[in-house]
Image (cartoon, rainbow, N blue to C red):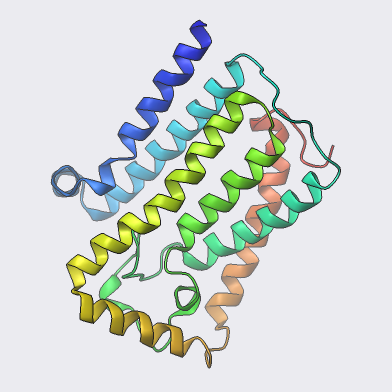
Length: 222
């Protein structure tokens, strides 16, 4: 029972820290104190640390099986995680006025939207894909609660960010920007930067495979 309380406590702390970006007064004060880059760096480290702590707390919770692993689980997860890594690699550090986490959004060119012409919220999509795949693979109560909640958080986050961005940009400007980005994706070709990012995504995927048994304690291809 104590391990369930610890799991719930870490879960609450995880969501408390992840509410910072959606609370403009708190975020503004931190950006003023740390600077924009400092905030991004420290918040990224905090997010990774809290995720690691949450995964650890999940592993300490009592094992309550809900479903068994099927033969198709692992191949689907291998492919799905590669896709998630590629999506994240194509999105991180690029201007994206549609979602959170964009860098230098004023420089966004709707005539060359990149992945944002297809996905307004690629990082949330990558997170949702990661959570869904791991929920399927880990069919016990604690992991289903963990990954199911993160999946719900990623899906609902898209709607919340859409509402906020539409309000901030104005409904007409928002609609025009989305329309121009969608039309431009039909004629855009992968840039040199896109190809480099795809290679980085593959490298990150391979690193995750190598580190998984060290960090999580389970090999990916067992």
